[in-house]
Length: 493
Image (cartoon, rainbow, N blue to C red; front, side):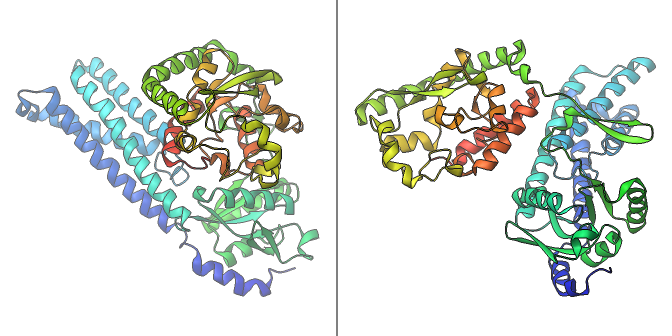
């Protein structure tokens, strides 16, 4: 079978709308490199002036100028060697930030060590100015470039044109993930599926996206040229085999096209993955999830101190909210709802009351208007039970502030899966019930990814991903993103 001629018109349309191969990456690489250079030079100059104050002109001695030039050069080399500007890092966020911090730390560490060896002391004021200022400025610049790139990707620009190679099911799953996360920057322009399937379908439709089938697993290079793909992702290797994978890798290398092999595992963080060559095979070892980590002393202490700090900071807001609730409607100030916690144990979750008194008894009458995800959750955008003050409290998540008392009681964490109702838990299957392996959280992936706007499937996927990949760094990232989600009021109703 040859690559299908009848797909030419559709593929040409894809060509017209796709970015020219790799041009946008080169542009961003140059822009980031230029920004890094400016920041490094400015930071070193400020550090020199600051460390010599109130006689900054003294820094113009030849050896100090030479030392500054050498440090700036080493800094730029370190950022390049850490691959912080590599095309695979563009717009990736945490990985990119980690490489910037690591490269900067290495430069100043080696600089301080070299100064000791040669007997030239580096002023502590110099390091105290240059190190935090440099890291902060570099990370801010990377964040701004990343935000610009993600905005453009959301509008269809700065995307990798992807050709998928694998079975029908894996192509559908991968395409759905890329469609759901448009800011990831992957646009599927075609697929090559095994010969046993290509004779029965010309395209694969995934959530309204039409993916043309351009050939089988042995016609990848021709399909890549036809679709102008700059990245080939192999979603299944069983049909190609080791020999086929090796040959495809060589062919794509000659074409200057990136090749990516997607493992069969899903929603597993890189911290749990370890690549180890065994007998010539690149095996992927997957560490077991740390379900017990949520009860270790470090996260528990963090939850305790963070909850106490937040209660002190938001106590004036809570007092105003309590007075407003009591003054505008009948009933108690707080609403105590049963939720299911870790291990299926029920606990009372506290919130400011945002509905009329006795709202729970009205749920059965309103189930016909349920807009909740998959029918499992009960949600209404215009719930008649919500009071005017309740709408304000919900919009800015003020109603959830009393849950910090649940954290102090050890029933919840700052970050975790969404606390479910008993009737929801009774509908859980084995996959969904894994979210009960850790404490529910005041915030979580569900909070920063859409809240009530999420489908039931997406809610389950996010909670399962959190449980499987729990880590302190992930918790800190989620907390940082929560403030933005609350301000935007995404999915809050």
